[in-house]
Length: 433
Ligand code: XLS
Ligand code: NI
Ligand code: NI
Image 1: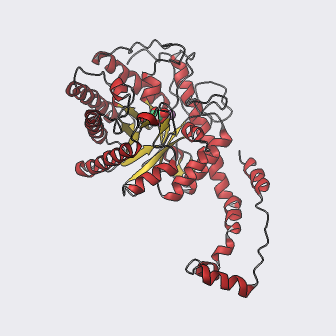
Image 2: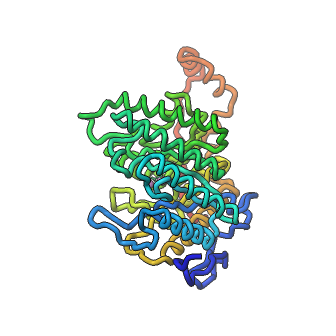
Image 3: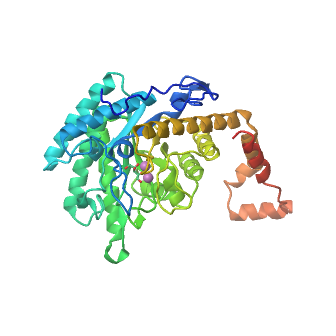
């Protein structure tokens, strides 16, 4: 036991009327929603990087957090692991996620970094066995160290491609060892700063080959989890190749990987791409690649990825509505890829941020389930397309432009528009949120 969270109680469900701060008011893990326990629907994960490794910097100032484990020794990493698992326990989090660099110090060589990762993940394994959470996903940080400044798989230097591939292998090994349910690739610097020095076609070819190697390795070691790509349009690079769900899907198809790889969709990244979160979720579901979500929120007045904790129930309800329509999560879950504001210095801020976010997600999930169970939204959607259920409409799709034109003439067609009922549907949504 460390004393970092001293005095902070275990967070438990106390119902919406509770007056204390350190409680869940809406997240009740055992409550059954649409036939599934809430905990099994939401599959919350806490991310190591923002909660335990992020020092609180912004473009105008550095570290604001002074955590006792901020150092680069194995002793620091072990203290951080102790605090991490205490935090997971206090919040009753069923899952966590990490990058290699979040959890271990960088070694003097690749081999030493790998040994450090193995040692720390062995400690994780013990803590997980002793009742700790499961691993939702592991990933490699191929964007912070200066060696990755021009990209990882898309780096003009083949040695960086090699270093990146070897790093991903070690992180997949660690994820597999810990029973991780997914492995994520976020292409942090897979993109460009200027076209003037970039061979875009070559970089995309290399990225495709890299991903194919990742998929091959998954099968080679018998990893049963899902490989996920996390789209983001820009930041840190000016343009990132994994721009959004549509772009990623086209990339996967080009390399024949659309049945092998799904997407991890982040709220803030969807907004940066000029979409809504629910747009990205609905599109991924319709393409059969909806994997998991990174839950957070961008500040709508700032143009960057601020990774706030979520607190907007109506938005989250629409997001989970798409998740539920798609049948809910399989190996995916809700990872809080969210960080405290840099003035939120206290240990309790970390706990309250997550407890509040879990409550907000629970409210969103319940609202989404109620909308689905009510059925009127889906009935209206079906009614709108009802014409397509008719045999002659289906037959038309088997025809060609000549046969369709003949039919238009024969029937003297003159289509009449009808209302799409948007406001009526929006009013309906507002009854649930
Ligand atoms: C950054 C990304 C990152 C990924 C994991 O914007 O969201 O945190 O989720 O590398
Ligand atoms: Ni993310
Ligand atoms: Ni992000």
